Length: 124
Image 1 (spheres, rainbow, N blue to C red):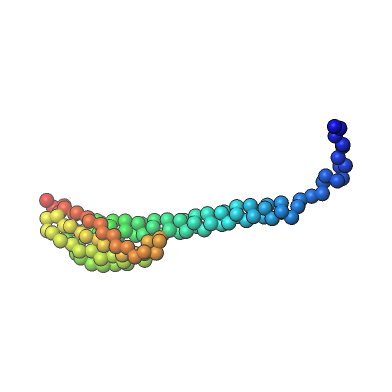
Image 2: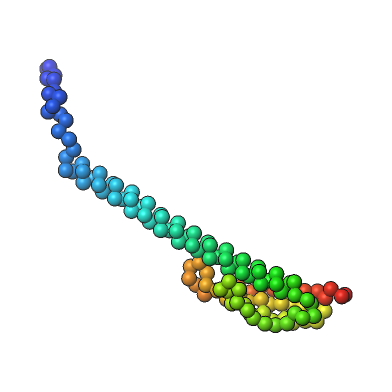
């Protein structure tokens, strides 16, 4: 049995329709995966930024309460960077400040976060 040489022009006819369809299916699957990952990453970035801003607002309000003169520390409320705060002050020798922050987190859920601050009387 002898092998017959192939005609070089005969074997290079190009891709078949089936090969094109399979290639397009693979390409579309990869592109859809990239698109899904991109939208998830974008949501995570926005959520993380919002959570960081809310944490900064809570820290800012807590620092303001800590820096307030001991005798003038009273219950109150405020809004800082879009976060609503209410705080109650109890005690005399050591004041207990219950700081409640109300905000929307990065997932869109309404959240209440409570921070307790203890302020001893500096005169004692």
